[in-house]
Length: 182
Image 1: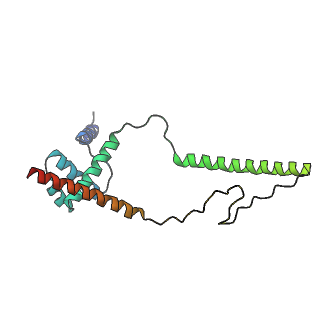
Image 2 (image 1 turned 30 degrees about the horizontal axis):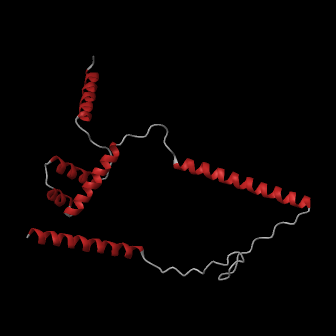
Image 3 (image 1 turned 180 degrees about the horizontal axis):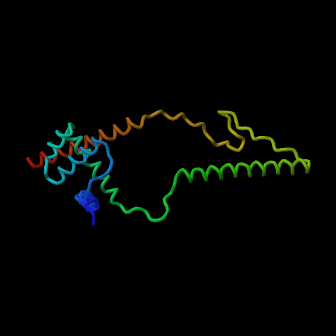
């Protein structure tokens, strides 16, 4: 064996050892890698959450938010991958669009055939149906009433009111529990 081949073998084993030393995830931006490292250090017990938040330059609630997002990402990544072929949304959309165009052509063809058959039989085409004017009743709808206009309501305000009432009931329950313990 020559000296050159032994050197290349040593380089290969050194590279393979370096690759086997530990998990080094590929990709990711520098801030994302720093956040991941800080979260892993907290989970390993090396740092406290407040120290990690300071190292990242964020507040403690923001750190906990990042940690929760990271753990949910970890959990979703650990889910087993679905078996079989993957669904390609773009391909499925293209197929549906082709089918839609084909069905429209078929519909137009059928309508043309109906018009030809009507003409050959000497039938007049049906008159288009007229919509009743607003505020007027159809002859068959004698018992119908005019609808009142719906009052506009902002959903966000309704939710806020609901949250305030829940908050008031919770605070009243806490106050009564404090009074009972006193």
